[in-house]
Image (cartoon, rainbow, N blue to C red; front, side, top):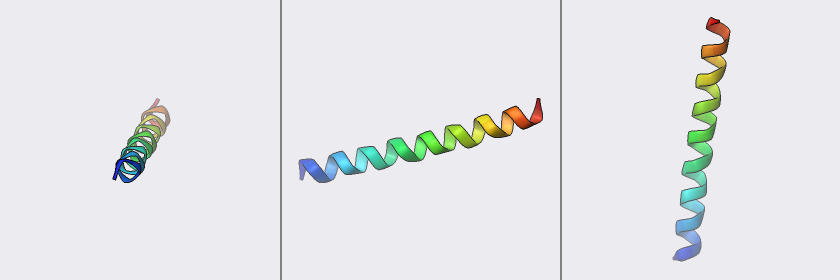
Length: 31
C-alpha cells in the first residue's frame, strides 16, 4: 500500500512538472 501511494505521488509530481514546463514554453514563445 505504501509503495502504491509513493508511485501515485510520483506520477502526480511528474504531471505537474510537465504542465509547468508546457506553461513555461507557452509563456516564453509569447515573449
